[in-house]
Image (cartoon, rainbow, N blue to C red; front, top):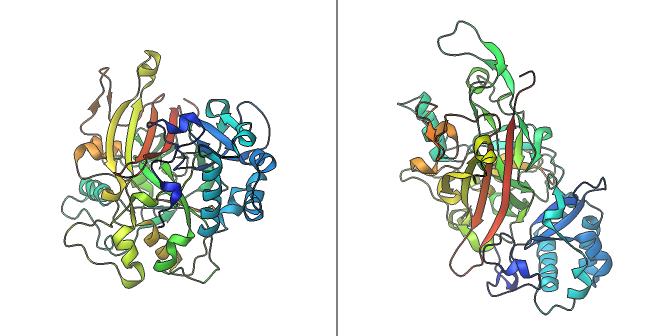
Amino acid sequence: MQIDATHDPALRSWVASANDEASDFPIQNLPFGRFRRAGAQQPWRIGVAIGDQVLDLRAARERGRWPAQVDALLEPLAAGDLNTFMASGSAARRTLRAALSQALAEGSAQQQALASCLLPQSAIELAVPCAIGDYTDFYTGIHHATTVGRLFRPDNPLLPNYQWVPIGYHGRSSSIVASGHAVRRPRGQAKPADAQQPTFGPSQRLDYEVELGFLVGAGNPLGEPIAIEDAEEHLFGVTLFNDWSARDIQPWEYQPLGPFLSKNFGSTISPWVVTMEALAPFRAPLQRPEGSAPPLPYLDSRATREQGGIAVRLEAWLQTAAMRAAGEAPVRLSSARADEAAFWTPAQLVAHHTSGGCNLQPGDLFGSGTLSGPAADQAGSLLELTQGGKRPIRLPNGETRSFLADGDTLVLRGVCERAGARRIGFGECVGTIVPAHGT
């Protein structure tokens, strides 16, 4: 991953809020999102987050002064089409990133023209950032897999294929919603261990999962695998992702073909896509437990071993309905590092997904799977934090939770920090549970 002038930690923007050390969106970030004015029934536009503002790329193309090459790259974005730009590859992204960085930097000759292209983020609404055609959820978090496996198989928590195969299943893209969208409690079949037959009704063990989402950029032709050495070229960027899960429905339905209704009722994605270029200063070595088998050759490369991971600190925060009514802020449930949690890198997911000839398309989404750290307070789900519901957690206001209640709001946050680099973030990934139909 190339480090260049756009990553300079000393670089400052004429957008004053972008220079705030606490901002997720300094000039070194420049993530893409899809937005419109709040309450306005107008077409969605593509913008770039900068501080507490969003740069409208349609207006920026019309009012700014751009070289012909940059103007051509802005054309699909000005039309509200992020997917076409995603397909253009990393060289095009670097070109546009450099142009936007220069235009938004202090002293830019573009300041006067582009100042009128900014909108406060408080005045907009955000959608799913691109058209997601297909969605695959993986199981890369080894500490999550081990902890959950131990709940059901104490003597054999990890199945034999885990260290060889990036485990995944095809999910439902139609129910992926943007941050802020309510999530309805699902109904389905569940069968308690002591019951003779299943029952149908609202899930009583609703959970969240702290994940990263990897969005595909350039695709590949059907039947043409992507080599591990080329896999990063096919990734556009990263989001936060919450794969809501009905833990009581899942164990009854998942054998022998995997999750179904326990997963397809809703997944929440953060609205800003942090590009792979913005993440270049935060790449990290692949970390695996001592004694792990080496990947098969098609999943192995020097680059993925030395910098295949991404050092993102992930946090989960909970605000109950009672806390909200009392004006109390969310409380943090857990914090973990993605690069310390993942057994497989994003590049390995791309290489494996296409190894049989599957064709990826711009906007396809990979979920990382729950990214939990090794410590108890680093768990990325209530299933782990409460040991399967056996040990409810106590919140500061005296409430307890084994699983999510109606009215609970779950917030995911993610930041990248490293000495010698400007801190960048992902914004928030927020969802509130509403009651099941008929209740």
